[in-house]
Image 1: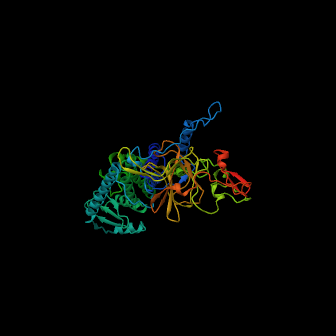
Image 2: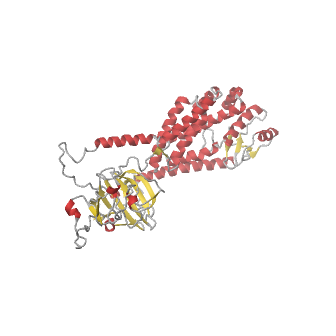
Image 3: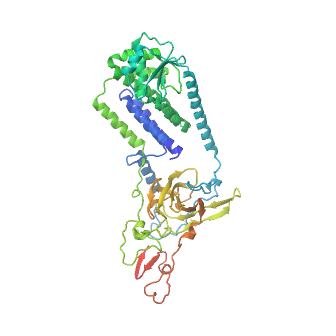
Length: 543
């Protein structure tokens, strides 16, 4: 997934969480919102997604496909049933529109690096500035806290014994803080201000327990993750809202856990302790994020806190699982869904037909090709019209010499596309940075690779192993193409080669049973027109 795809998917999930938070903040357990924020972070930081048949994007794809079908022409025949004259084959928009239409080398080998676009430069500059800000804030904080000195009293020793943690928690006195705070991932520390009243053990217990819960729950790990999401998606205002609200919900969830430890009877005293120790400031190092409005929200949440029933906990878990499944997953596009499969006889290829008398399995093109003897034609045999060949030409605007590194094969939309050779899928993505649109790239064991572009749908994922003849997608017009077309390219050692020299384009002369003895070749395409036939011995089979 690209940064934009990750940001768009995360934005929808963030919007849903914000709406749910506004409607049910004081009704649901606070940990449920943390789980939802964690799902949003995964969507923003992990460039892969889990496909699901319940994803909301399945419905969006269905409506989009239905709209495209409504706009599609009725067919090749007119109202009277007479055949219309065939339209000229569509041509992929080559290098004419802009210099960006030139070939992008496969991911496996990119010998030259294209110049960075202005938008990419702006994005990198913004990410760098955000990263420098957080790095400077963390560095300044650590320098301020370096002078903290250990605090050791009988009360603290007893408190540490009653509150064990996986990593030993140290308590220190620091003059740079004005309210208790926790910091440190591997060596957690609770920092107390210089003006701490050691005689008020009740209020001190509240403060220490609050920071202890932050450390025990791993809340300190949220800070770098939230900062990373903000650095990657700084241009997205919803990610800024995620950063703020997730920090606030960390405090709400921590308050809820503290009240569970101390008991509901201590809610009022705990709220008073929060008000007295609140600090109206923000530091990227601190888990605490306190403003006037947020403090009011925390006090209301504490005072409205009630024992949660098993039914409420189960409902919250189901709600979190449902929202994550629907809004944090990607559409499920199996090979058998949305792809028009043709009969196996219609998907056979010249030179690789069945032996005389051998039954055909009908399981797709791969079933009639037990071994790879060469490159398979990537489309059904009736679609062999090349609308744009492998060529070098002068750009009409810039005057630069550009290369079209493959062939464009005209075919109707949603025609199945087959793997010309078995291998491992190196890329399966919507490449918004090039003219290819939806594409799939397959790396082969001999070091070569094949590229299939302008697809309407992709039926394979990166890392998937495919066999020769497997359906990998459908013909489309994504990217810079003026009509449905398949761009097919072959690359050897990262350099494009002409695919036309590697296929038997057109019908070759074959021998019939009656003329075999005489050795006279007969071109059946000349006899039957556009319907190509091959003859295996005395047996004819239509492609």
